[in-house]
Length: 340
Ligand code: NAD
Ligand code: UFG
Image (cartoon, rainbow, N blue to C red):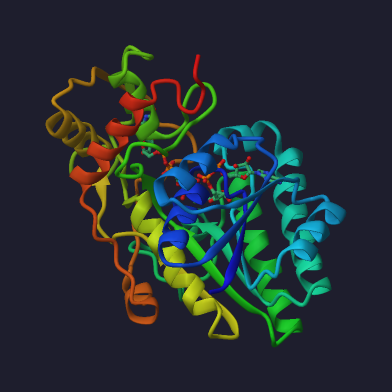
C-alpha cells in the first residue's frame, strides 16, 4: 500500500486523517513542528488503530530537514495540512502568516520535485470563495476577495499549486476546500485542542460546557438569515478525514488539478448549534448576543455534488453526532492533550 506524508499531521484535522488513512491500509509519515499541536495526538492515533506512524519533528520550511524525511521514506503522496489558521491573529501578524504558510508550500513543492514525488493534496478553505460569490459555493466559481491575510494565504497557495501543475504535467494536485470542521473521533481520544481562548464556535461551546468559560457570546443576531445568526456548513471531522482518504485514492490515479468542496451542503445557524448541543448532551450553554464579528459572512455552505460524483464521498454524520462527539472529547480531556 502507498505511503502518505502528512505535513502538520499532528494537528486537529491531520490526526483524524492519519487514523482514517491507517484504517484504510495506507502507511503514514507525519512531519510537524508542534507550533499548534503535540506528539500526543499521534500517539493516540497509534493506540486507536494499533498501527505505527513515523513521526518527525520538522519545520516544513526547513528544506534540508524535509529532504531527510523524503530520503528515509518512499513517499507516494503528500497531504499538506501544515499552516497557521487563526483568522484574527492573521490580521495582527500578517507577515508571520504569509511567511509560514507560503514558505511551507514553496519548500514542500521544491523538495517534492527534488525527489520526484508527484501527488499532493492541499488543505484549502471555503474562505477563498470570498464575499462576491453566491451560496451555495461551487468549485467552478472564481476565487473571491478574502477578508483577512489567512484567507489570502489560502488563495495564493491554491494559485501556486495551479501554476506548479501547469509547468509540470506529471503533477497531480487536489485542492480541498473545507467548510467548518467540528466534532472529534468517536473514541473521544483525539479532538481539537486550541491554545488559549478558542476563536471557533464549537471549542468555545465545549469550554463553556466544561466550566472553563462562563458564557458564549453569539456574534450578531441581525443577519439576513432565518433566526438572525450566521449560518455555516458544519462537517464532522471524521467525515472530513474520510474525504481525505478518497482524495488520496484519487490523486494517485489522476494528473492535473482538481478542486473539491468538503462540506455537507446543509447550513446551520449559531443558535441551532447551541440548541442541538444542549439537547444532545443535556447541558445548558448560557449565552448572550453581542455585536457582529468583523469579516463574518451571513452564510457559507457548499454545493457538495462534485466530491460525491468524482470521489464517491459524502458526509454521513449528523449534527447530533458532531455535538455528541465534540462533548465526549472535551469531557474526557478537559485540558486537551495537556495533563495538568
Ligand atoms: P491545526 O493547527 O490543528 O493543524 C496544523 C498543524 O500544522 C499543527 O499541528 C501545527 O503544529 C503544524 N504547523 C504549522 N506550521 C508548521 C510548519 N511551518 N512546519 C510544520 N508544521 C507546522 O489546524 P487544523 O484545523 O488541523 O487545520 C489543518 C489545515 O487545514 C490548515 O492548513 C488549516 O488552515 C486548514 N483549514 C482548517 C480549517 C478549520 O476550520 N480547522 C478550515 C479550513 C482549512
Ligand atoms: N461564533 C460566535 N461566537 C464565538 C465564535 C464563533 O457567535 O465565540 C460564530 C461566528 O460569528 C460565526 C460562526 O460562529 O458566525 C462560526 O464561526 P467559526 O469561527 O467557528 O468559523 P468561521 O466560519 O468564522 O471560520 C471558518 C474557519 C476558518 C475559515 C472560515 C471561512 O475556522 O478557517 O471558516 O471559511 F477561514
